[in-house]
Length: 544
Image (cartoon, rainbow, N blue to C red; front, top):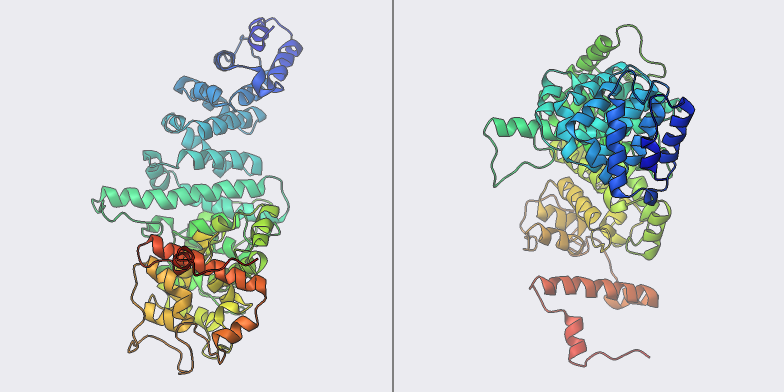
């Protein structure tokens, strides 16, 4: 007898145990044991019976196992396609609105899975008031597993622009609700509460969607959108998001490291959200550097404090850590995080196979997690002159030791320069280049003078800057006339002296890099690969 036949054999008079056994058998079935047509019919039947509040097949004692069975069936897109039909989502919405019950949580899990698999259901869920219900859960509930479900659905449902996003920001108090919830979740994370980290991750994803979509919608509504020059991440801002600023910076500065990698969720999601926050208007909060004095309360901190008091009029949730008075420095924090990340994964040659092996071992996609942090640092120094001055003092001080090639150094600068010629980490290579370019005041002459034209020529070419630096430039350049403009270092060694100090393996590695670089230039029509040309003309000898 099939699972569908067993289910249809049940009646309202069947014992609760018999019904539960059928539901559990569906939940425990192997995915391939239920074919597409049977799965679709089971989903329809379950939702039809769940819609009957009294006297139906599924009583109050069987609702939870029935929802678990529905969730299991919905893990396949064929099942979720049925779940996201408007009438069926309305059934689950009704159950989800019941206050703090396991049935409500399980109904939300069914919805979350279905919306993740079937894009078309997201607008339907919002059209029946599902977004408001999830926001109410985030405002009302303190249990991290419940908050997680509300945040997960809100994140998935707002990946595309919709009227709900505008409503959430302007009239539903979403900014205040989520800012306050992030504050309490940090305390719960520190206390080790299960699911608090997951809840924070998805709440931050929802924050990112709001910061990204709402300003763009308002920009387009005002008729300011230029199809030929569409805004990119961080170009637009709305003051309605001011309450997000202090809590996001607080999280950035104080989230504890939870894995062996310096960069991991939820910190990576905080970075994504901060990429949408302007630096200039909130410079006091970004760059408060005094560790002892108490800073003057800023407008956004005051706003957030009022919001938290209004939403939590009695006392904060257990585990809540209030925003500290001791100021933090986001620039120093960002630099330390990026330094630790590069030291962990790319201490020497970033293209060495051991680097990729370590990334696999630690389950870290370095080319995805590190670039946003480098771009965040670039934004800080691009928008604040004092931040640029401080970062330059850390990376390119006036007394920088240039007696050895800069790219050979075992410090932060050396690791960055080695990454700028990386083949295996193209996004990180570009983002580190943007950071160093911003550090040099976005001046290609200053960049070439400080780092050596050979170290940054590829980056500048990709930006469309193909001319070498001019000798009479007024750029900020090192004063020592003995510095080689190509390497950025002082060296009395001839090329032969340098080769003499290299092992055969190091020579082969450098030759391979040169071949790859020449090959790229050849493909761009700039030159002919001299190695390939010599090989074709028989001028190279095979080494036995």
